[in-house]
Length: 362
Image (cartoon, rainbow, N blue to C red; front, side):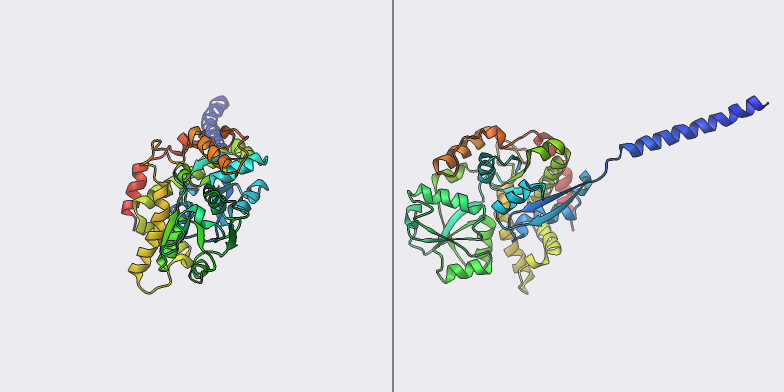
C-alpha cells in the first residue's frame, strides 16, 4: 500500500521537476539587455538625423533587438572619434576619410555600416558670388560649423583640387550652424561655406541661395559611415547588428512617410521645429531639410541594394582620392577600414512590414 502511494506521489513530483527544469532553462536562455551609446557628430540634431535618433527610438526598433541605446551628440568628427577611441561611446557617425586617417594613426576603428551612398559634404558660395571654381578660393575665408567638422577634410581636398594649399592659400573660420552661419554669410565675414546637404537646406529656408564649388572626385566619395572599435565589433557583433538594423528600418520608414517622420522628430526634439505660426510652412521647410539627407540614404538606386553595404572598390577609390589630395599617406589596406561581415544579418528583416507601418502611421 505504501509503495503504491509513493508511486502515485512520484508521478506529479516528476512533472513538477520537469516543469521547473524547463522554466529554469528558459530563464537561463534569456539574454540581459545590452546597453550602448551612439554619438552623432553635430550638435544640430535636425530632422535630417531622425533615422539616427527619433524614429528608431520612438518606434522601438533598437529596443526590439534587445538593445537600450542612448543617442548623444558632440560637435565634430574629430571629437567623436576621440570619444570612441577612449571607449566612452560604442558607435559614431563620421565621414569615411576620418576612418582612414584614424587607422593610419593606429586607432583601431572600422566602418561596419554606410549611411549615405554619396558624400553629404560640399563647399558652397552665395549664388551671386564671383567665385566659380576651387582655384578662385585663393585668399578667401571658408566658414565651417566647427574646425573639427567632418566637412573640413572634404573641403580641404576641394581646395587642393584647385591647385591651392589649404593651409596657406585660404583661411578657415568656425561660424556655427543655423542663424550664426547665415549671419556670417550675409555680413560677408566668410566667402564660402563648407557644410553638408541638410545644413545647406536649413540656410536656404532662411532665404539664402547657393552655388556649389565642385571637384571631379566628389562623385566617387561615400557619405557618412558608422564606425566602432575593432575589439567591440569582435566582442559584441549582435549589438552592432541591432544598431544597423534599427537604423535601416528607420531610414526605410522615413523615406516612405517623411511627414510622419518629421512630426515624430519634432515631438522628441521640439527645438528643431521651425518657430513660425504657419504649420504648413514649418512642415514644408522641415521636409526640405529632411529630404536633403534622406535622398542620399536610399538603397534602391544602388548596385548593391543592401542597407549599410560598401565595397572594397569604393574604399580603395576613396583611399586613392585622399592620398592624391594629401589627406592620408595611403599605407593602410582598405580591408582594415571597413567590413561587410554584418550586412546580411542587418538586412534580415521584413521591409514590407516597415513600409506598411510607415504608410499606416498616424
